[in-house]
Image (cartoon, rainbow, N blue to C red; front, side):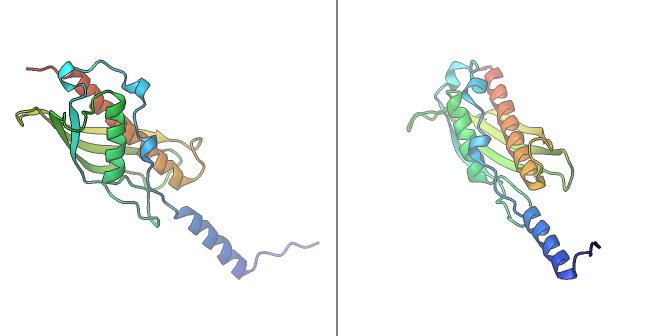
Length: 182
């Protein structure tokens, strides 16, 4: 019995399927970027409790399905709002005394690799009721997704994005917990 090598059309089909599977980037999921209530259970300064709101969130990028997973502004806003709500910081409808502006500066992402490390860069600005800044901070937070998280590369990048944003928000919440009223 002889084994015949695959014909060219079959080879092209196989490469086409592999390429198609490798180019299916999907956006990050906000629910996977939210800092859980147990992680956010910290003591925050009394003036901040139930007194904060997100005024603007800018700078995120939409995911191009043919390229690589990104985090857009709306998904980041949903994750940050959920995290701040879990921490007991979000104000009611009319109780916002500490507006917050956020600019997602970008994600540093790998092109290829087994372990995918993504670092998110986010600028946070929190203002007091008089409009004076109480926190001006740019936070960079890395997160690595490994082959054990997913054998599929674009999924590993997505998981690294989500973990990096979650780590970034965690650091922001830590900065708020350490804030001392002048």
